[in-house]
Length: 424
Image (cartoon, rainbow, N blue to C red):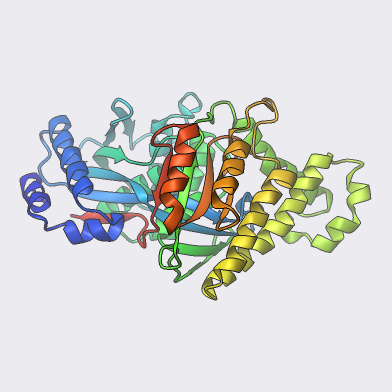
């Protein structure tokens, strides 16, 4: 669409229904998309025909650290997202800009892993372009401007949203939109693992790409089963609140990587590749033998997996049945297991930094037995997730922000679409 035409459509309200569907609000999105379009026009004045895209953040609702063991999760796309203004170019170079970092460029003629590039935005873009090349789609040049309203450190997986966003841009512009959500998610995960250099499961990318509330089973990782669940948290009288405790994720890569590594060590000692393949009763029977070659923490983390994997299945069923009481009991049990068995509420190297346990304690005090609260995402730092009765949301926000700072508590809305092209 012509840039001036798109700006006129935004100003006239032609996209209001689309904004309302994705975000639940209109005016802030008008301002946001206008700003992104105007900045794109300044950066790439030679581009006139543009397209706009969105990829959602995600919230993990059940299945803490189960996906990398081919387990089950419950996750949802949320209204906080990343958007892109994009247009193809003839240079064979992907030029990327955002509000957070200066422009970087990636040549589509060089899609090998660059060791010196790991941990950078360019590495993810290169990895995603390589993923499409591997399925027979040669990505050409692109000009892309990205804007994000996913707070840094919020545990809403901005990295997965970015990967799905770039994948959706390439898919729509150079692949006719044929790849689909699951393939885009796998391309994003591979880029994060191989090019960016961070070990991760597939849950984040799948939730961001699929949209909605979904139970996802990774028993066959190359072909995960995803089942959308028709349940409204808001209609049940609750809100999902995420509180950013302000603790940094910096230097925690080893802590994150240790969780799948330790679970896998237990599985391999039992003769399997991942814990999903192992029998729970056999695991408990073998604990005396496992202790001879595995640490106690490894055993505890494996015990968490077996129980958490089953909990994710039961949570999904509770929501299908509309049984919020059973669901909240399971969520609280998940939080307790993460604390006691998985042990991912604070970094082992810094036991005095316990912002997540502090946030959970304060949440329980405010909730007074209603709803539920748990660590959110990978853990060790970052965020907690609470299911808060609508009538006490203001009290909850005020209580959390009094300790963790203004703007630290976010009320989320589940959105039904994941990675999408909004207009072309």
